[in-house]
Image (cartoon, rainbow over all chains, first blue to last red; front, side, top):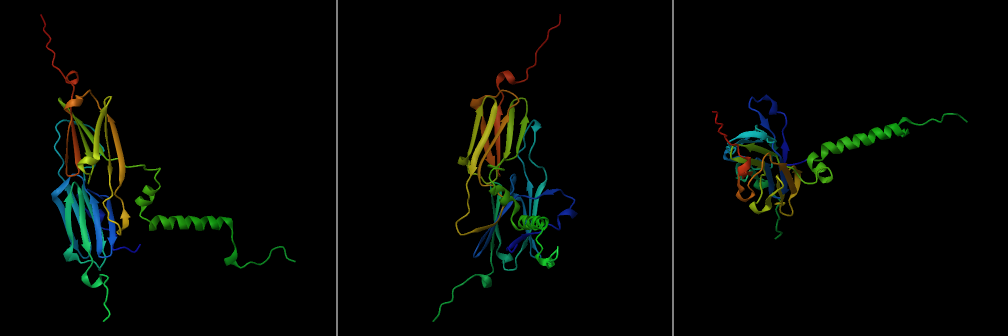
Length: 123
Length: 155
């Protein structure tokens, strides 16, 4: 699959902290792509995004609302979220921006200037 | 005339081999397509999505905690009917036209979750909050459902 952001599955199993992979969507446009990662329960403080060797890693630690009482039914997971993506060299790693709103992390990954499509005016 | 005509190995079309090659195509398409989007596209298998729900109870309240990342406050509906709590709503697609979804794992569309509550609740006092993509619904127990201490006088 020829995409700008590729998932990297190899490095996940050498960690002591338990993680689950959050759902993510990748949207591609001409000038870059947008990555949407679902991390319910994570706020700005619990989010850790890093780029190293063309690998984008997103870690989210939940701060769940404290509920008094006994748990009688559980479907949610307790683990932190973690997912790694391999970035295409055409993406400018210095210009990646991120925001989190209601548990959805949106990352904007712009293409580097020199690879953007451009029109050349003929004089 | 010979009973068996010579046929070059490449041209032999055994039905069993055909089956193998179509299996190979199926497997290839499985790896090439984003798996979840291909399953979601089938529609009938997941008609909508089902968010994770936790239920707690203490002396005064029943509390439901639902993971609903990226919803608008107006897009969630909470209803109570016959001791069953139903949380439903719809997530609208935010993607602008022209963007190509390379991988689509996030669910778009309607969802509905129902859960039978363990005790009677006071429907008029239900409150809800939505923070960090988590919906918390607090349902105060009905007076008759609250645990009561009964004094037994022994003469």
